[in-house]
Image (tube, rainbow, N blue to C red; front, side):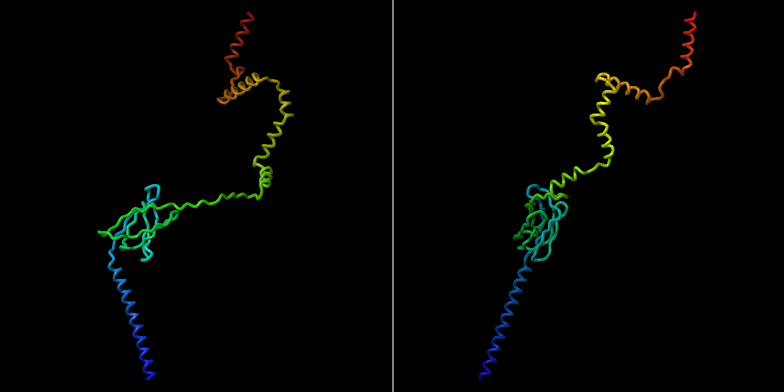
Amino acid sequence: MHNLGLVGGVKNILIVGFSGILLLLMSVDCALAQEDESKVVQFSGVVTTQDTVSGIMGAHIYVPKRGRGTTTNYYGYFSFPVLEGDSLVISVVGFHKKYVVIPEVEGDSYTQIISMQEDTTYLPELEISPFPTEEMFKEAVLAYRLPNQGDMNNMDSNLDAVTLAEMARAMPMDGSMNHRYFMQQQAAYLFDANGPRYNPLLNPFAWSEFIKSLKKKKK
């Protein structure tokens, strides 16, 4: 009798467990049936910035529950089918994520303009220098030699106080004389640039006039 009672208890447990599994499967089927009954909606819209109406290219519109989504085109426009009640995530680099729930609509399409808020991160100021200290930087600058350092040294040697004093002694000219000399040199340079300088001694007509003038003086 004891064995019969144990067997009956096991059967009852199995029946109860089997009933629970049937109820679970039935609830899952009901949930799937309800999801299947959700209406398909063509969700379209434009993803824009918060301050302007310009579209954001490459923004991701994703339905995590369904494992599908789309991205915006060059103008920030998108369009893809969803179900009523779907929760969507809109994400793009440089902006905060935004969440949208598809409501129940009368027709078969739903349109929305999604404005994204910028996610700006300000980094602390960072100074990069090849020298660990300011003193080493100053020493490197003072020790630097230019490619034409030889010409610079020659210029410094020609413009020292002793050389300038000697030049002033050998050419005692005031400002007016110095200006006149410079203008004469400039005029001669411009005159010679157009051709050889004229020499009257090489002109036979000039010699002829000179000889005639001598004969007139003798008479």
